[in-house]
Image (cartoon, rainbow, N blue to C red):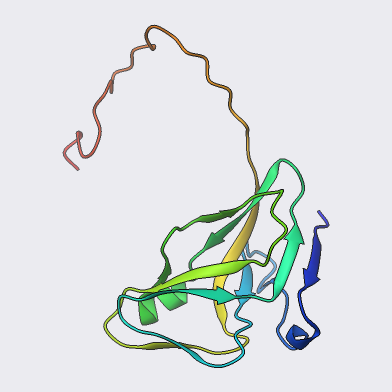
Length: 147
């Protein structure tokens, strides 16, 4: 699948566009296009620029997900994971990073800060009913199986 992408400035030519790290990767690495180092303090959430915009085809979304290496090594995550970029959005892709750790984390230009998965979705239509089919589980939730 080919997807249109554009750099928002000639000044971001040095920052690689999203790309797959390996043949089997489901997610593309997304890199920071910050002009200067950005320190994310413990408990802080920041919006990180990427320097690109894209045209996701109708019927698809781009899911923005945390990178496992940043999570385990630095406790850096994405607050609204997975974030969704809709097919009709044409603005800059920006990443909501949160420092869940206890030490400062520094984002540098070109750092891999997230991963992006392109995925199809289904648009649902509600069909209001007086009652729903019953199941063995019923309304049990939030640990109802004891696990």
